[in-house]
Image (cartoon, rainbow, N blue to C red; front, side):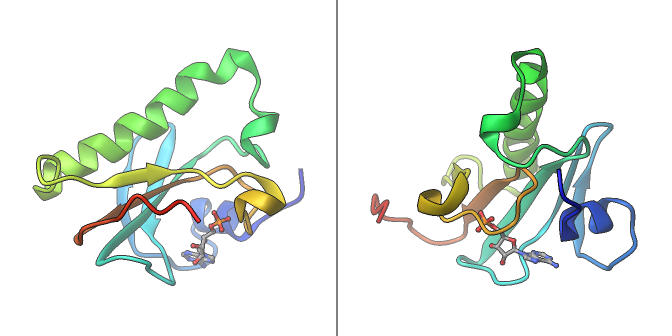
Length: 114
Ligand code: AMP
């Protein structure tokens, strides 16, 4: 896959506001937040889109979700709630082609998936 800005963030070649890290996942603040809390959880192993993740990496996808839940618990908004979502390709609105999970919180998010 082509190199993206997220690989550079993972390698600490460009700055980011990193808020979460474990052996498989890095979490950092979105540069253009759509909610008071907007974190991107990125696997350190790069796949361009969800379509490119092989079945053997099911655990990696689980780790992304659990990293978001762990962060929500730690920051105290797990019970009030939050949203996780992944954009895939053009119609999904994906702009950075390194798989990532968005975590949005800090305001009431309406069920508008437009
Ligand atoms: P997506 O549209 O799902 O591909 O999401 C890509 C996200 O990456 C967007 O919400 C951007 O605001 C965010 N983004 C792009 N460049 C950076 C950066 N250097 N640091 C943090 N977030 C970024």
